[in-house]
Length: 617
Image (tube, rainbow, N blue to C red; front, side, top):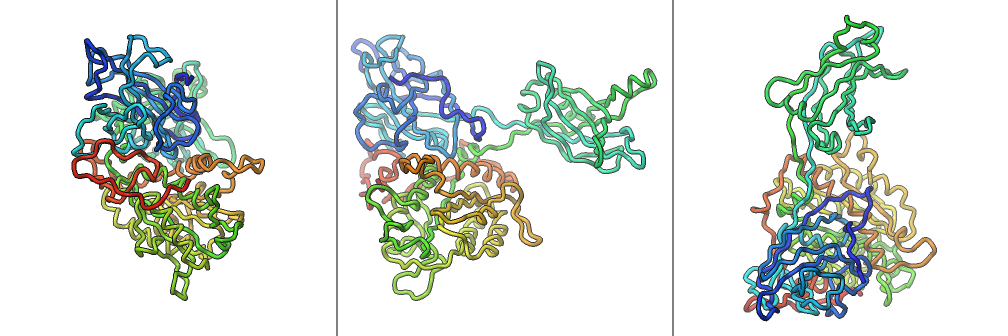
């Protein structure tokens, strides 16, 4: 039996996450009681083992008895109500880079106290989706599925079904709140014998046990007793736990290059006092040096004054703010078709199509696209190949549309990408060289058209088997694109030595070429081989590989998006008036992409498209 637990999702304090609060309501539920209306309760489950893709098969085992699903919580029982608005909410950690598959099941409670055994209670309906679908729309409405069904997302002009509907609202639980202010010093003590002091400030949080911890340090101002530091921004949770009266310590030091820095003085304040600096007159804080005070006694006044003004609380927009406001993630993929991959018909080739498992290119494509598809309502991607000779061509194509049949880079759904990849593999001649610059420049041109607002952000996935041939041109292209709404993910397949590729992933310092420096870090590089086995040579399940690979390559994307938006001064659109979300084309089939079944209650005249390619496995 799957027992409920307090925490939801994987606990890992080192990974960036956002807490999301879900509010649930339902409408037009079935009435299973004879003399009164149903008494609904909603249970929330998360799939914690097995393949984390929406099922396409009938649900045979009740979720409360299925060991692959873990109960994450349940609402209260609402008596005699077919349109319940549940008051209990659910707090979940949200990870952009993970597939977090959820089930919402509604039962008619036979008694106010509902235990772990749900067999005495009547099943009313079920909806299954990933958390990303909910946060992408902020408010998600869906048809409830019957006993063996999983429901389907509500579409415009849909009508109510016998099982009713569920509405799930997602809100970010806690925003990133910062205090911002200007600060200067006046009349600081002179600490250097031959010159003036070189002062800087330490801001420290004081804890209940009396200890203090550094949370912010300003820059050093050279040779001045009246410094003005750059505008300060500090997270209020970090600074004082958002407690307006918790003591805050400000230390002023004189920086010394050759010996220990000299203590000028210390001031004590609170968040509420700092915020009074935004109401007009500056807040003045006296710096006190206890050693100097003890030595001078009553003759001691202070060691200088700090003045703080323009104080205010700012709330920086988060990744979810932009997504809820309709910002769409556009995706382009580029596949390496150079000869170093090996002949596709040879079992040692990285492009070899095995009957029992996907090749490394397929794993890489699915790992990223299975996550990214939820943030693109059109379900349309751009797919390219590079380093091959096309049919009836004697020259090498530095970049070509992966869909050779239509001659266009635009493909529909993950299944469209996979189908185009397989077809191209059977029709092109693998050649070379491995050049990235043409791919990056092509996608950067598209991103250039997105710089005017926050409606779209571009992601480029490049999958390659070896060291690139145009490193100098690639670095130049990345630096040129670093000011655009663009993130580049590079996945290395095979056993090549990719050491030089890490130069492009500038985590420690911004990418530089000659005198030019990138505006921001936009590249993430990983090799797939470290995810393929358990360290003992055993090939891991493809689903496990995809989950782990996606977690590694995608976790930087939210920060890159918000960093770009902040750099450009863009704000997210209101949830009530989001950017337009384009619908998928008629030939899109969600079943093939593992995100649900076809709707159970299609609107009149609607025809579900026929699948054009089989699932990979």
